[in-house]
Length: 265
Length: 269
Figure (cartoon, each protein chain N blue to C red):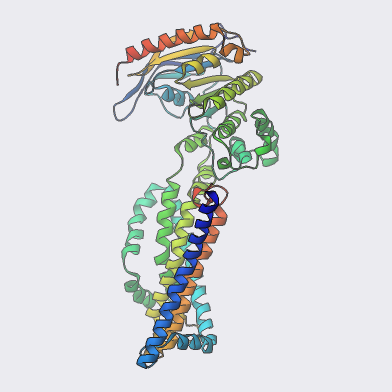
């Protein structure tokens, strides 16, 4: 498994002085610096309105920064159709008219892969999230947690280098969220991918990530970075350990200071 | 508690079917009675029984006319569906085309078809003119609904397609058209009834005799001949045709959407 704080390994992606001003004059981000190394699990934590999601969309290339650069030191910036990035939205964002199988196969189909060949990738992807038997079901026949699993399977079907997740479990109940947290960690380790995970939950950020990046709002920027150097795999034992509690307290304090620095909306 | 609720629902459903039938029966009985008691001549107001007899005795003539009207309606409907969806897709792909043509689509829609039909009959052969009328009346709801549907794509899904480098064609075929399908089907359901109206208006405006004459022409012709029972019989057939078209399109709508769209799903209990 990747070391949690491989400080000297090369960067996968780096945001340098990134700013984003919307046409309505809102400065979502200003001077945002963020470095992500291969194999890391980075949590972006912050109050709502701090630009976490905007930062994620900029990394994905879905939004252009108005200042600064997004650098991909190891590789060229991911061009269209290369599938180097997987994205999971807060909503499952599935096509309601397509079966689970066809939803997961979408990235492969858009790349021009034939159905037979795609099936060899889709079936393991569904296995990974435990939904193999549901491949013919339609999204609305599934529970919220299962839909989110489909969304994760779709993001991972291309085996991306970088998985971007925008508060994916915020709308789920706690039992489902804990289960999905564990499954996500398992997949992250098995696939040796890199994850940037946006959340507004201190507990979730500490449980999942090897590094918590705390952001402040107005304008959105990095306020503090805290390494969570507890070893993986993590499980219920970690969730109830004093060590976990101590990490949560530190991150919580950083978040409180970040919110004070961000001022009231 | 539950059993009582479902018994109540059953009774509600039975009433929904039974009450309109009762109203129909009462209305027809009153009509028949008034005609008989007042001894109204059939060229003023025929009794329902008389209309039914005319329907049966004139079935040969009327059924041929019905077929003519139905074929025109169907052709007009197909053209409206193709034209409406096609134009909407074209507008969606090219803003310039949309800006250039959309105002004229609106003008075609807002100008009363009864006023356009005589002009079309001057410049086009009769069959083409009738078809053009059916098309003009029916294509706009398809165009408007399809346009709305194509613009109602989930933003995050669109972002996902862009992330995976989808081409314009892929976005259209795999994202926009499926997302628009419920809207398109809604437009088609309106267009079905409207293409019948368009065909009828054009037939009445055409008004020329011949073997290929549709039901609306039969109504006009019977009017001139004071054959009022046949007017009613032809009108009855037109109404029935409209109802059948509406329910057929509703059925298609249901079959196409039942797996995924809220509108076609049965209420969950």
